[in-house]
Image (cartoon, rainbow, N blue to C red; front, side):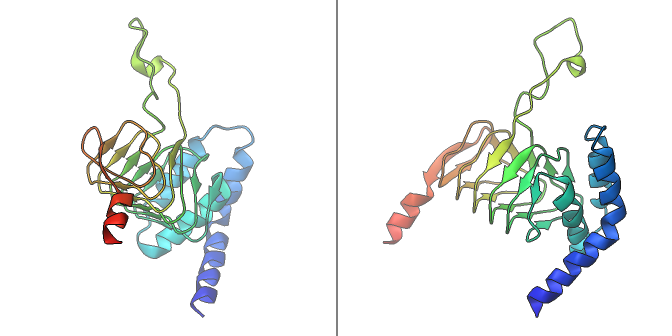
Length: 199
Protein backbone atom coordinates (compact mmCIF):
# COMPACT_ATOMS: atom_id res chain seq x y z
CA UNK A 1 0.00 0.00 0.00
CA UNK A 2 2.82 2.39 0.92
CA UNK A 3 4.57 1.70 -2.40
CA UNK A 4 1.36 2.30 -4.33
CA UNK A 5 0.76 5.61 -2.52
CA UNK A 6 4.30 6.71 -3.29
CA UNK A 7 3.89 5.88 -6.99
CA UNK A 8 0.62 7.83 -7.06
CA UNK A 9 2.27 10.89 -5.50
CA UNK A 10 5.17 10.62 -7.98
CA UNK A 11 2.73 10.50 -10.91
CA UNK A 12 0.72 13.46 -9.58
CA UNK A 13 3.97 15.41 -9.10
CA UNK A 14 4.89 14.86 -12.75
CA UNK A 15 1.43 16.07 -13.82
CA UNK A 16 1.66 19.18 -11.62
CA UNK A 17 5.13 20.03 -12.85
CA UNK A 18 4.50 19.07 -16.51
CA UNK A 19 4.34 22.68 -17.82
CA UNK A 20 7.87 23.30 -16.50
CA UNK A 21 9.07 19.96 -17.88
CA UNK A 22 7.61 20.76 -21.30
CA UNK A 23 9.08 24.27 -21.33
CA UNK A 24 12.49 22.91 -20.39
CA UNK A 25 12.44 20.12 -23.00
CA UNK A 26 11.46 22.55 -25.78
CA UNK A 27 14.07 25.19 -24.94
CA UNK A 28 16.81 22.58 -24.43
CA UNK A 29 17.09 22.39 -28.21
CA UNK A 30 18.67 25.85 -28.51
CA UNK A 31 19.41 27.30 -25.07
CA UNK A 32 22.08 26.84 -22.43
CA UNK A 33 21.46 25.62 -18.91
CA UNK A 34 19.95 28.96 -17.88
CA UNK A 35 16.35 27.74 -17.83
CA UNK A 36 17.34 24.58 -15.96
CA UNK A 37 19.03 26.67 -13.28
CA UNK A 38 16.04 29.04 -13.09
CA UNK A 39 13.55 26.18 -12.61
CA UNK A 40 15.87 24.52 -10.09
CA UNK A 41 15.93 27.74 -8.06
CA UNK A 42 12.17 28.12 -8.32
CA UNK A 43 11.42 24.57 -7.16
CA UNK A 44 13.98 24.80 -4.36
CA UNK A 45 11.63 27.20 -2.54
CA UNK A 46 8.87 24.61 -2.01
CA UNK A 47 9.25 23.12 1.49
CA UNK A 48 8.77 19.62 2.85
CA UNK A 49 8.38 16.24 1.23
CA UNK A 50 5.98 17.65 -1.39
CA UNK A 51 8.76 20.00 -2.49
CA UNK A 52 11.12 17.04 -2.80
CA UNK A 53 8.61 15.13 -4.94
CA UNK A 54 8.22 18.13 -7.26
CA UNK A 55 11.98 18.64 -7.55
CA UNK A 56 12.49 14.96 -8.35
CA UNK A 57 9.64 14.99 -10.89
CA UNK A 58 11.32 17.82 -12.81
CA UNK A 59 14.86 16.44 -12.52
CA UNK A 60 13.80 13.01 -13.80
CA UNK A 61 13.21 14.69 -17.16
CA UNK A 62 15.81 17.47 -17.01
CA UNK A 63 18.93 15.75 -15.67
CA UNK A 64 21.04 12.99 -17.17
CA UNK A 65 19.50 10.74 -14.50
CA UNK A 66 17.49 11.29 -11.32
CA UNK A 67 16.10 8.15 -9.70
CA UNK A 68 12.51 8.56 -8.45
CA UNK A 69 13.50 6.95 -5.13
CA UNK A 70 15.63 9.75 -3.65
CA UNK A 71 15.14 12.89 -1.55
CA UNK A 72 16.10 16.47 -2.45
CA UNK A 73 15.85 18.91 0.45
CA UNK A 74 14.47 22.44 0.66
CA UNK A 75 16.60 25.23 -0.83
CA UNK A 76 18.96 22.82 -2.60
CA UNK A 77 20.16 24.18 -5.95
CA UNK A 78 21.47 22.42 -9.06
CA UNK A 79 23.65 24.18 -11.61
CA UNK A 80 24.19 21.47 -14.25
CA UNK A 81 21.65 19.15 -15.85
CA UNK A 82 24.37 16.57 -16.62
CA UNK A 83 24.10 15.44 -12.99
CA UNK A 84 23.23 11.84 -12.02
CA UNK A 85 21.41 10.96 -8.80
CA UNK A 86 21.04 7.25 -8.09
CA UNK A 87 18.50 5.31 -6.03
CA UNK A 88 18.25 5.95 -2.30
CA UNK A 89 20.26 9.19 -2.34
CA UNK A 90 19.39 11.74 0.35
CA UNK A 91 20.36 15.38 -0.29
CA UNK A 92 19.73 17.61 2.70
CA UNK A 93 18.53 21.23 2.69
CA UNK A 94 20.54 24.20 1.44
CA UNK A 95 23.01 22.25 -0.67
CA UNK A 96 24.58 23.54 -3.87
CA UNK A 97 25.14 20.74 -6.37
CA UNK A 98 27.35 21.22 -9.41
CA UNK A 99 28.20 18.75 -12.18
CA UNK A 100 28.42 15.38 -10.45
CA UNK A 101 27.18 11.84 -10.05
CA UNK A 102 26.02 10.63 -6.65
CA UNK A 103 26.03 6.89 -6.03
CA UNK A 104 23.27 4.72 -4.61
CA UNK A 105 22.28 5.17 -0.94
CA UNK A 106 24.62 8.11 -0.33
CA UNK A 107 23.66 10.67 2.30
CA UNK A 108 24.49 14.35 1.76
CA UNK A 109 23.95 16.45 4.88
CA UNK A 110 22.73 20.06 4.87
CA UNK A 111 24.79 22.91 3.48
CA UNK A 112 27.10 20.72 1.39
CA UNK A 113 28.60 22.26 -1.76
CA UNK A 114 29.69 19.98 -4.58
CA UNK A 115 31.67 22.05 -7.07
CA UNK A 116 32.28 21.10 -10.68
CA UNK A 117 35.96 20.50 -9.93
CA UNK A 118 38.55 22.96 -8.66
CA UNK A 119 39.36 24.74 -11.95
CA UNK A 120 36.04 26.36 -12.87
CA UNK A 121 37.73 29.73 -13.41
CA UNK A 122 40.78 30.55 -15.44
CA UNK A 123 43.41 32.57 -13.56
CA UNK A 124 46.54 32.51 -15.74
CA UNK A 125 45.95 35.67 -17.83
CA UNK A 126 46.75 38.62 -15.57
CA UNK A 127 45.53 41.09 -18.25
CA UNK A 128 41.94 39.79 -18.19
CA UNK A 129 39.48 39.68 -15.30
CA UNK A 130 39.05 36.19 -13.86
CA UNK A 131 35.36 36.19 -14.73
CA UNK A 132 36.25 36.57 -18.43
CA UNK A 133 38.69 33.65 -18.48
CA UNK A 134 37.48 30.20 -19.45
CA UNK A 135 37.56 27.54 -16.78
CA UNK A 136 37.36 23.78 -16.88
CA UNK A 137 34.38 21.88 -15.52
CA UNK A 138 34.90 18.42 -14.07
CA UNK A 139 32.17 15.92 -13.27
CA UNK A 140 32.71 14.95 -9.64
CA UNK A 141 31.94 11.35 -8.68
CA UNK A 142 30.67 10.43 -5.22
CA UNK A 143 30.45 6.69 -4.66
CA UNK A 144 27.76 4.48 -3.20
CA UNK A 145 26.78 4.38 0.47
CA UNK A 146 28.76 7.47 1.53
CA UNK A 147 28.07 10.01 4.25
CA UNK A 148 29.05 13.63 3.52
CA UNK A 149 28.90 15.75 6.68
CA UNK A 150 27.28 19.17 7.13
CA UNK A 151 28.90 22.11 5.39
CA UNK A 152 31.48 20.07 3.48
CA UNK A 153 32.99 21.38 0.25
CA UNK A 154 33.64 18.72 -2.38
CA UNK A 155 36.01 19.44 -5.30
CA UNK A 156 37.34 15.92 -6.04
CA UNK A 157 36.07 12.35 -6.42
CA UNK A 158 35.03 10.27 -3.43
CA UNK A 159 35.00 6.47 -3.53
CA UNK A 160 32.39 4.02 -2.26
CA UNK A 161 31.44 3.73 1.42
CA UNK A 162 33.36 6.81 2.56
CA UNK A 163 32.69 9.09 5.53
CA UNK A 164 33.53 12.78 5.13
CA UNK A 165 33.52 14.79 8.36
CA UNK A 166 31.42 17.93 8.78
CA UNK A 167 33.07 21.05 7.37
CA UNK A 168 35.68 19.12 5.42
CA UNK A 169 37.15 20.45 2.18
CA UNK A 170 37.88 17.63 -0.27
CA UNK A 171 40.54 18.79 -2.75
CA UNK A 172 42.02 15.38 -3.67
CA UNK A 173 40.41 12.07 -4.55
CA UNK A 174 39.36 9.92 -1.60
CA UNK A 175 39.62 6.12 -2.07
CA UNK A 176 36.93 3.58 -1.11
CA UNK A 177 36.14 2.98 2.59
CA UNK A 178 38.00 6.10 3.77
CA UNK A 179 37.15 8.31 6.72
CA UNK A 180 38.40 11.82 5.90
CA UNK A 181 38.18 15.08 7.86
CA UNK A 182 39.58 18.60 7.86
CA UNK A 183 40.63 21.39 5.51
CA UNK A 184 42.06 20.09 3.30
CA UNK A 185 40.46 16.73 4.02
CA UNK A 186 42.91 14.05 5.16
CA UNK A 187 42.26 10.35 5.53
CA UNK A 188 42.41 9.41 9.20
CA UNK A 189 41.22 5.82 8.99
CA UNK A 190 39.80 3.12 6.75
CA UNK A 191 36.36 1.71 7.50
CA UNK A 192 37.83 -1.68 6.66
CA UNK A 193 39.97 -1.41 9.82
CA UNK A 194 36.87 -0.83 11.95
CA UNK A 195 35.12 -3.80 10.32
CA UNK A 196 38.16 -6.03 10.97
CA UNK A 197 38.30 -4.92 14.63
CA UNK A 198 34.77 -6.24 15.18
CA UNK A 199 35.64 -9.70 13.89
